[in-house]
Amino acid sequence: MRSVFLFISCAFFLAAATYLGQLLLTGQVSDIETNSNPTEILVNIPSAKKRLIAGDILYLSDVVWVSRPAFEDKNKMQVPAKFTKNSEYFAVSKNIEAGALIEENAILWPSDLNFLPNILKEEFRAMGVFFDSENSILPMLWPGSRIDLVLILDPDKKRIFSDEVTVKLIAENIRVLSNSSFSNAKNKESDLSKRKSALNLILEVSPDQSEIISLARGIGSLVPVFAQLGLR
Image (cartoon, rainbow, N blue to C red):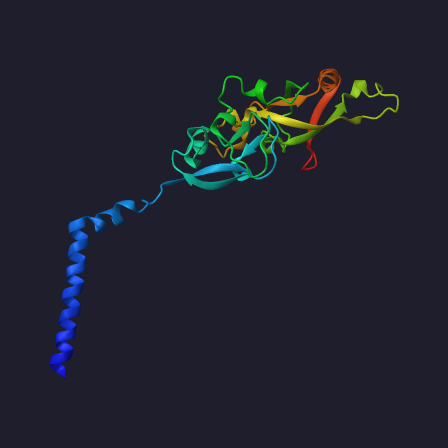
């Protein structure tokens, strides 16, 4: 009985060896290996969390990173390291739907020569405004922030308004385009006194707002206050 079992086992082993030998001789094993797909190299590409309008200012927290095959499209190859190297924020040059990829040719960097003109909304202007360096919220006004402007009249100008008020809201929902306290402190020094040396803001204003702000600067001091989040 044992000899029969041993004979069957040997026959099965020889048959299997013969079959594998034929595969090797005909090259079928080699074909199986070369036809298998190699592991794809993936890179992270930014996509929009929400619908974007041309000129919107974004931060890294405003995008979702999605994986795509490397070199799928060179216009989309914006990896996280490139963002960190260029700037903490950027803008988009065209409308982008929520979930769509933010392609490289749609990104505007603050270092670009025409950054400000390209991010202005239609019919708006960029206006530089100087504020009191002691204002505590100025260091917190990042590009893209929204503010209202309050006018505090000088003592000798208190009767300029018919209702004799001394404090008046003169402009609302203004977008901050640039804050010189950040450009003067790129090394992120912790000493706030150095960041307050030249606290000028560049604001996006309508033609009417630019006139009002220009007149207001001659009769008092301007104070920025945070506008409600979500206003556009």
